[in-house]
Each structure stands twice: as structure tokens, then as C-alpha cells.
Image 1: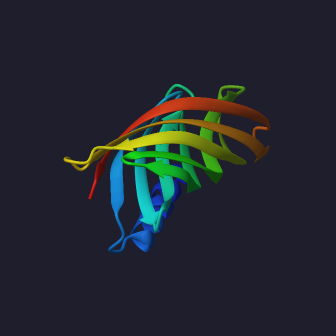
Image 2: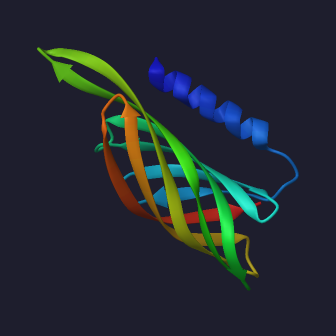
Length: 149
């Protein structure tokens, strides 16, 4: 049920930000596999990722607002703050227990947008710190491939 709620929230958030601004949709591959959506606001952009984590036993929704620090030709260097919500299951005395967590973090990365085709590729680092649910910190490096529309 919690996974369904997370998917509904993600779809509503993406629908809310949809407008005439440039967007991109694709995949982010690192420690986890995530569906990735970007929505530009001027030079900066919002990135929302929905993925499977912990060896496909968890669902996570991540939102990061990235500020473009430097841009030259088709290359961009960006950084920004973010939040992540996690849902996962554990087993306790032969019973499945649903868990949830919330974390704060950020993202630092490089992106290349191909000029002649509507495609971009990015490499980023995303550290996160959980403060609700499973406490702790982690980080991941990921490669993203997105179609711009």
C-alpha cells in the first residue's frame, strides 16, 4: 500500500510541474536503478527519481533542485539540495514488517546535452543522510541517460 501511495505522489508531482518548460525523461543507473525526470526552470532544474533500491526490495523517491553553477557550450556543472523518501520490507520473527524513512542530501554532477539530437548524459554524486526511519548515511555515483522533450 505504501508503494502505491509513493507512486501516486510521484505521478502527481510530475504532473504538477509539467508545463512548456524543457523536460527530460530517462534512466539513472548507480547503486540503484531509477526512472529519472528533469524539469527546467530557467538555467536550473528539478530532478525527480523513482527507483528500486536495496537489491530491488525497496522503493525510493528522490527530489533534488539543482543549480547550474557553470555552463559552456553543451556542458553543465550543477549542484543542489534534495530529499529522499524510502519504503522497504524486513522480516521479524517470520513476519514481514513495512518500514519507511526520510533523508536529506544533495547532488553534484556534470551533464552533456547533445546539440543535434534531444538526448543528454550525466554523471553525478548523491550523498544522503536518513533522519527518520533507518538512520545513517550513504552516497552513490550514477550515470544518467535522458531524452529531452
